[in-house]
Amino acid sequence: MEITLTGITTTGTPHLGNYVGAILPAIEASHRHDVQSFYFLADYHALVKCQDPALVHRSRLEVAATWLALGLDVENVIFYAQTDIPEILELTWMLTCVTAKGLMNRAHAYKAAVAENVADPDKDPDKGVTMGLFCYPILMAADILMFKATKVPVGKDQVQHLEMARDIATRFNYFYGEHFVLPEAVVDERAAVLVGLDGRKMSKSYGNTIPLFEPEKALRKLIMRIKTNSLPPEAPKDPETCTLFQIYQAFATVEEAAVIRDRYAQGIGWGEMKQILFEYLNARLSEPRQRYHELLAKPAYVEQVLKQGAARAREYSVPFLAELRRAVGIRPLEK
Ligand code: TRP
Image (cartoon, rainbow, N blue to C red; front, side):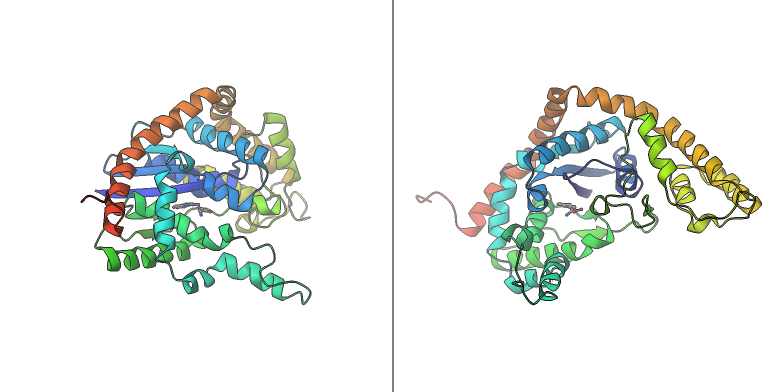
């Protein structure tokens, strides 16, 4: 059986870009019965990027509540927090001990951090680089290899991490026998990449996001702030280069998008289009938004769902780690 697994780093509030790029396809896939899926909060990964405990804590709840509010099928998929699976960290160490430092030197995220430092002659090349950042791909490999995932849906920026996971698994298998399955990255080329308020990619690092479950009034305000060009209302407009249309299209059916595309060709005022987009999104999001706020008010319930998921995940990780310990020579002395 195919095993898919993906992690969501808990360092912010889920936004429209996360929704169309990752959450929506994953929730749809969560209803499939021909695959076993593992979805988890990558909260150990969050510590690499974020030293603000309140934010990490809040984001764990927000991310879990978002997925539940949108209808993640938690009976079918195994949904848990990484930090509830202690075996992950022990596996991380075993993998660390077979990972070549040179392999980690080549990681894009680490290289980018060093390159930025080198550009400034007053800075040490490794300024601000923690061992967490440097070893991040090993932790990610442990997440994946622990559950013998065959398919890992990720964004393009994560493809290198999957190659590293395969490298690390191969090295371990070479020393200790065939314990790990080699995972493959699945990059959904159709998954929309949304543009943010300022016209750049919607991303929490640019601070240009529209949070998914913003209250109605605030959602309206944010949509009114989206950057548009200065064409007059009656001028024909290009939908393909327009943020408003792109967001609309990511949510709408093909037919609905075609109708709006026609309106662009005829000329549509930005004020009217913003109103259309707001009403459309608001209608789509109001129900899950209400469920989301109910869940935020019931953190003990969310915690319990995660704990149940962790118990199911540990049915795999506990015996597998025992096997791996024996494989590397950590076993009772009398045998
Ligand atoms: N590094 C991933 C990201 O930033 C999150 C992640 C952690 C992940 N562990 C994973 C994704 C395992 C897929 C599989 O998006």
